[in-house]
Amino acid sequence: MENDKDLIKEIFKDNEKLLKIIRNVMFDLEVSKEDKEILKNTFKNKEAKEAFRIKLHSKRGDDVKFGSIADFWVPLGDEALVGKSEDTIRQIVLPRAKLEKMFEVAINLLDNPDGEKVDLSYDPESIDADPLQINLLARNKFLNAIEATLNFINIQANNIEMPADMKKFMKQKNSTK
Image 1 (tube, helix red, strand yellow):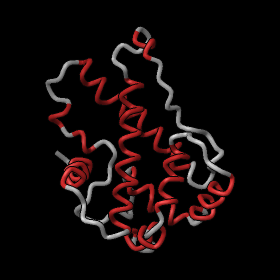
Image 2 (tube, helix red, strand yellow):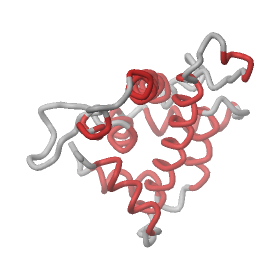
Image 3 (cartoon, helix red, strand yellow):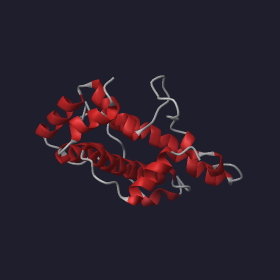
Image 4 (cartoon, one colour):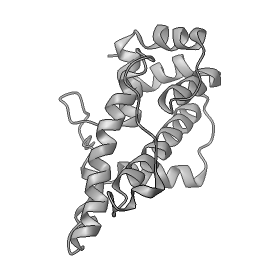
């Protein structure tokens, strides 16, 4: 596989339009037929799709370099769960489980922008059916993760100095603590 960083640069350098198309598709916003074709043509290359997925959503696999832990659940760490109330644990774990599924749906939109969409709807009246607001927490985590990933890709592709808050976010995202 080509170096992911090089592939990201090749695809996204000076290509803010593509980043916006991805965001619009993943957020189920209006996307023109022409923009959908741009997206499909870009991500018909499975390596390109995989490079984007790695930036958004880590997975365990045999191609992970030593010294890296690529697991979606590791960043929670013991301190996030140990000694917490049952409701708190539910509000941490259940949105993350939904988020993992949302990421998979979103990744599939890269080469099939007319496919299944991520459900981003929210009904404030749902408090009785979802008292811990698991759906809202997952929704907001998804929106923030997509924006942060697109921003990170733009920074990486265009050799922009990463803002301090983004460095902190990426460190926390990739932390095992």
